[in-house]
Image (cartoon, rainbow, N blue to C red):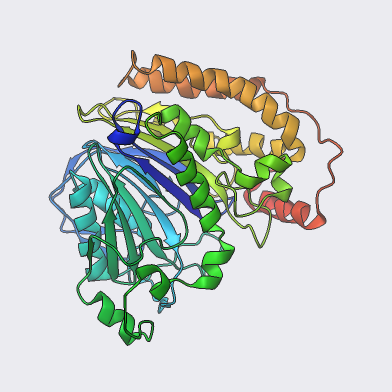
Length: 434
C-alpha cells in the first residue's frame, strides 16, 4: 500500500511543485536509491521486469527509489523535473496472471526515462498500457499479488492524476493539491479517458447504463475498504489543505510521518492499522510497511532536489538530498541492498528500526532527537550547497555516524500480542536479522 500527494506552485510556500510519497511494501523488500545517467541506446529492445519492449534512442537521467528485485521503481524524478508516484488500486477486473504485461513500477520508470513533461509522461504511460497491459506479479514473497495502478505525475508547472484498469484509463488535471492512496478517486468528471472505456465496462457487466462513474464502476469494495485508503487519503490531502500556501519540503516530510488517528491514542506499532500513512507492518491484516519515502522539489529553473530516506518508517528515518548531474551517485553512497541483511544503508537502518520496534516510545524519541537536528540542518544548508554531490555524501555519512552513536533503550514493559512477535520473528529469520 502507498500514499502519494502533490502541491502545485499556487499551493506551496516557495511557488514550486512538491510531490511526496511513501512506498509501502513487504518488510523484507529492501528498497534501493539509484541514479541512472542520460544515455544513447543502440540496442533495439529493453528487458523490463517480465517482458521485452522496444528501446528508445535516448533516455533522460533519473533518480529512483525501487524495490531491489524489479526493473521498475516505486517513485522517482528525472532531470527535466518530472516526478511520479504510483499506487496499487483494486478493481473488479481480474488478471489472467500470465506475467505478460508491465508492472506499474515499470510504467513509472519508463515514463521518467522517456518524458520531458508531466503531460508527455502521462501520454507515455497510457500508450504503453494500451499496448502491453499490466498483467504482472508485483509481490515479493506474495507471488499472487497482482493489481491495477494509479499515478500522480507532476512537473514544475502542472500535475495529473491517472487511474488505470487493465488497458484502460482516465485522468484529471490537478488544480492545487491532490493525494491518492490505494483506491480509485476519479468519479463522473474527468479530463480524458481511453477510447472505448464505457464499452469495456459494459462488456464486463460493470456498467448498466446511466451516468458513468469511474470509481464506483470499477472499484473492488472489499479490498479497497480493508486497505483503509480513504482514511489515509483524508489524512494526506487534509494536511495539504491545512498548510496550503505554506507547504514546503519540511511540512511534506512531516505529512509522510503521520500515524493519523493513532497519534491521539499514543502510537504503538503493534496497535497500528492500515489507516496510518507512515505504515507499520504487524501481520496478515497489515502485511506492509513504509520501506522508502520521497519528497521532490521541482523548480522551473531546473534546480530540482530529491529528498529520499532510503530506509523504512519515515517516523524513524532521515531525509537526505540527492541531485542530478553530480559525480556522486546515490547507490555509491547508500549501497544496493539485497534480499538479506547486508551493509547497505537500508539494512543498516533496518537493524536499528527493528530494535526500535521493541521499545517504540522511548526509541522514537531518541531517534528523532538525533535525526531532527540533522534534517533541519540539511534543509537550512541545502540552498547554499545545492547540487553538490559532496553535500549528499556528507548527509549520508552524518546519518551513519548518528546511527552508530544511538544506544536504544531495552524493551520496556509493553506486552506485545503473541502473533505480532511471531510475525516479526519470522520476518527477521527470513532476512538474517537476529
